[in-house]
Length: 240
Image 1: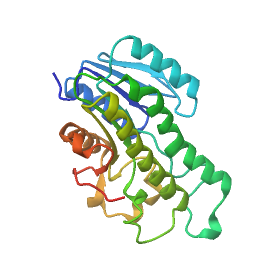
Image 2 (image 1 turned 180 degrees about the vertical axis):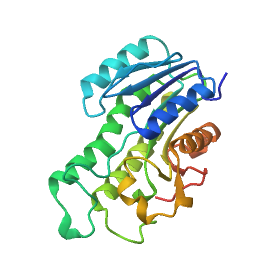
Image 3 (image 1 turned 135 degrees about the vertical axis):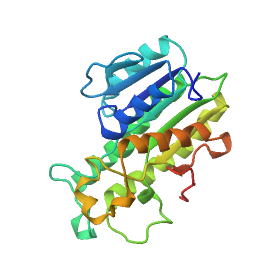
Image 4 (image 1 turned 90 degrees about the vertical axis):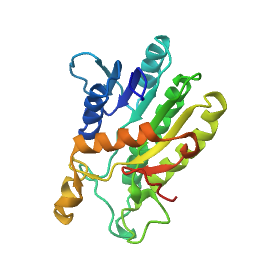
């Protein structure tokens, strides 16, 4: 049996990293994988696809009820995030701040994952090791911010890191073997990073497949003492 347990759930399975995580979980022998996204397709066993929108709490509650009725979960990964989009780009200076853009960034990067925590952390196994992880970012570290800019995205990821810390403390009371983490995947060749890849050396870019391997390696190796922290793809802790 995989060290990640027999039952896993991946949110954002339709994305580059999320899809790669689903594939890698299957490669590692996870027996039952639920790939959740807003546009689910079909997949061969052991993958089960289903609809879930992290900003639609009723959809989260409904799928949590169904999956919870089938037994405890061993691994839950939230592989969602937003940096840019239609009418939305990272701010270079304070003059670029727009409240509607900040609200969108906080909704996708913090509130949505927090709602997944609300409905899925209670489903983690209580009598064996379990893991819950959200994709965060190094730029959400306040102490590591040396360049400024990207105000909304940085602030939303910093808020997400705080949510993870609080959730880890609460979860430890009912599931003492569970590890709750924020994970920094590095700069991955994905739609999220595409507009900025021209400024990044090729050697610093990671494929979604390799990113998934790195993230699951970190998740498998994580211990209780690390719960609530932000870990990079190489297992190193990133200071708040």
